[in-house]
Length: 287
Image (cartoon, rainbow, N blue to C red; front, side, top):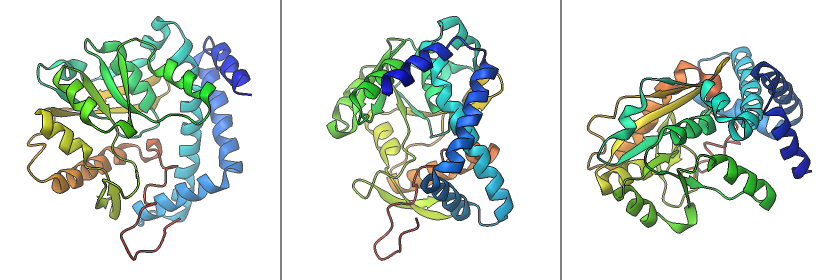
């Protein structure tokens, strides 16, 4: 089954973008209709994070989100298999990527928008130095090999595994690697702290602050949004006075800035994740 899926993705890599996106929209609709548990997660997240939005508006936002998730999944066909000229033509930089080329270490804050993989591809294609990211192994070996091959396609990508800890990452940053970091998910109680995210206490790893402080890195936001033409990859200004001496305050600031980024187009954030799965002691489960 996995072999057939990968073969289909290779075949689709030569399609016009509009046709790929049509298939992605159909997939998103199918997921909305059949993936009841994920639909519940999305609607719960939106209710918690946007309590002032009406139920009808949250439903419309959730449907739009599933459509974008489906499209971004199908976009792996051309991101990971199309010729370089095709990939480059569909990735548009908004704000030059020159901030990523600084002499000092750079940690990219790359939150989980649906275009995260496209943003990682754009960074890898641009980078003069190796680009590191933290990799989570897929349960199916064949699928894992395909994902690894897609993400490492341009040869300047270096995966690190979460179970290995941060020592190797820190050494790599000191040697000039750029770290593409996505610390905005609930990774469980271990190493997490509770800070607000859109008005709700959320278990959040303070890795962005701690890693940046350990190596004297500047933190640059890299935000990727799906568009009709492909993806816009926005490189923001480096954060001022970050990190500080207070990792908890830094992590709360990270979440507050992320909320501002999400507000630009809420449907593009990765709401299918159980962002509030881990609760402070004594609080009830939210899902």
